[in-house]
Length: 77
Image (cartoon, rainbow, N blue to C red; front, top):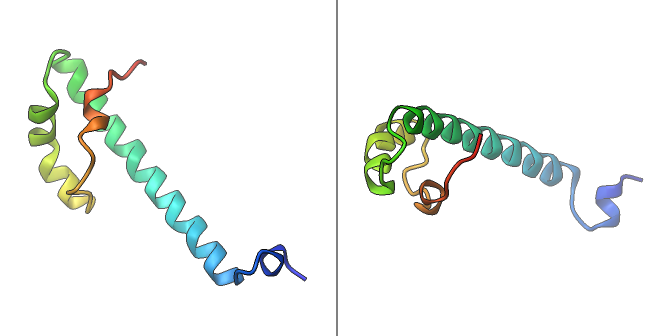
């Protein structure tokens, strides 16, 4: 008996959710890397301009509707 059946979900659903979570985390890490790259060149850039500069890259990642709050928070290395 699998642990998934104890919680009332199927294995396929469980592993699909895990896969989506990993993909989402990878995309988020990529966005943070792109933001850090731009912020090292222009440390006082605003969130709207940063979003404008990253907009094309976000479209290729299929993350057009990203929350602007990630650009507002200062990123500490």
